[in-house]
Each structure stands twice: as structure tokens, then as C-alpha cells.
Image (cartoon, rainbow, N blue to C red; front, side, top):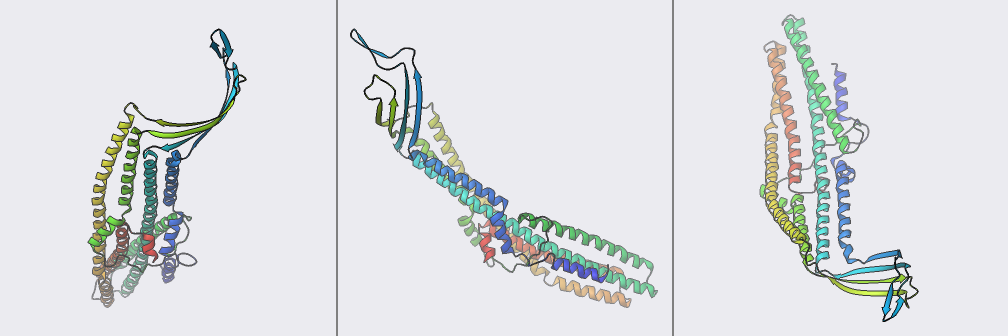
Length: 429
């Protein structure tokens, strides 16, 4: 591989596409606005909003328009002593309009409305959680791509180092200092480095496609990213993270809304034991030449009491109470799960930060070691194995350093997500 190939590689890494680089904040806005999971959550939220309107409908009047034609086998007649008089025609038309309004149902409808509102609240929280989950997915994909670019850079630099060693081996072979075997060994290690470079290039391409997929772009579009210079969780302690998670975790908020909704549903079922007061009014026309007033208005005030429904009301109430107890127990279990997730993410972040500290000097030491081993080899006091080992050590140190850096970035995003923080706000500041 010639030197111009290396510069071409650098241009591919540093300028993978035309135009300005995409920032993490810009990508998050696109995902939050157009992400598929977010759209699904918004659709479910619209369904829940409609359920509130449905629950409220009993408070609004029910209006019916009706009409019918009647044919009787016998004409209705009334007997007054020995006198028989017709009461109605044997064929007649009836039509009218009737409106019924519930006046009071002892909290059945209001409890149903409250239950639907809490259900809507839960769906709104789910939408927020979907946005946050999509944001976390994009952040991880973003850092994965940045890491892949650095791995590609390391692989390209390895190729250059092995090319340099091959040049040194050929110089020494031409001078008659070493055998042909060292040149052949340099060829093999160089070819192996080319393979690793191709693997790293494929990984970078795959991760770029992943970013494009989240942004709803064509998978093969060029992607150019900017580095992120933020640390939203700097200085936070585990206890502070736990406190924040208990207050802000969308999982806990969703189940809290579910508990409140179920409680209101139980109240609505229990209200079925109580009477319902209603008012019905309407207008009716009945075609009847024997009646003085074929057209008439009516107003009825009444009460309905469910005396017996085969045990259905009691069964629904018992089921609701059981489900309510289950939700409360599930919340206690979920609280422990949230705390465990926070601790896992917190320890992951601390471990990644420690790895960064360890790797700070390792790259510089490995670079100096390679420089010295090459000098020793060029002077004839070192061996090819020592040079190749030094190249491997430097490659390992650089790889571990970049992985520690981006691992800490991913761990930080994971910690913020487990705490229930809004990632759009945290990375958009």
C-alpha cells in the first residue's frame, strides 16, 4: 500500500460525506420528531385520548330518531257495555324523536372518566419514554460509529507501521544482514493488517447504516459526525442517581398512573350497585284518526336500579381489586429493578472512567516502545519479533483507549436513561 492510500483513508474517515457534520443534538431532534417508535407511541396516545371522550359520553344526552309502520291482524277496539268502539286503525305510521339524559349515577361515570384520564396520562408518559428510548438508541449508535471510525483509523495506522517494518526488513535483506524469511514474515503480517483494515471498514459502514436507519435516511448515505464534548452526569453520586430515578423514572410513573386508573375503575364498577337517575323527553306522532291528539310531547323522570345481574358486578369488582393489588406489588418489584438498573449503569460508568485513567499513559508508552524497537532493529541489535510485538502492543493500547473513551460515553447515556432523565434536554444544553 502506497502512502497516498493512507491519505485517502484519512480523507474517508475525516470527511466521509459532503457538507457539514451532523451533531448529536441535531440527530436527536430528528429521531424525536420522526422516529418510528415515537410515531407508534403517539398513535397509542391518540387512542387513549379518544377513550376519555368515550368515558365522558354518558354525561351527554342520548338522542334517538325512530319511525315505523304497523300492520295489525285485528283493529283495536274498546267495549263500553254493549257498545264497541274502535281505538285505533289496523294500519298506522309512527315516528318521533327521543332524548335521554343521565342526571346522576353516584360516581359511576365520573370514576370511568378519571380512569380514562389516568390511562391517557400513562400513554403520554409512554410517549415520553419512547422518545427517550429512541434517543438512547441513537446516542449509542452515534458513539458506536465514532468508535468504529477510530478503530478504522487504528487499522490504517497499523498498515503503515507494518509497511514501514517491511521497508526496514528489505533494506537489511538487501544489505545481506538478514535472511529472506524476515521479508516474507513482514509480507504476511502486512497482509494480515490489510484484512483487519477491511474488517474495520465493514464495521464502520454497518454502523453508519445503523445511524442512517434511525434517521430514516437511505442506508448507504454518507455520514459525518461531530465529537461530543459534554458530560451531563459529571459528579453525580449513586444515592443522587437513585433519588432521581425514584422521582423521574417513566416506568414508575406509568405504573403509578395504572394504579390510579385501576382504582377509579373499581369505583365505577361498585357504583353499579347504586341507582341511576335519568330524564327522558321526546316528541311522537302516531297516525290514528280515532285519537284527539296524534301528536304528543312527553317528559319522563325515572330511576334504574340493578337488583341482580347474575353476580357479574360483584365478579368484576373482585377482579378489579385483585388487579389493583397485583399492580401495587408489581410497583414494589419494579422499584427494586429500577434501582438495580441505575446501580449497574453507575458502576459501568465508573469502571469505564477508571479504564480511561489507566489508558492515558499506555498509548504514549507503546509509541515510544515501538520507536525504540525500530531503531534497535535498524541498528541490527533488535529482532523483527520485537518490532512486530511493539506494533501489536501499540495497536492494542490505542484500541483499548478508544473503547474506554466511547464505552464511558455510552455508559453515561445509559445511566441518565435509567435515572429517567430527558436525554434530549441533557444533550441539547
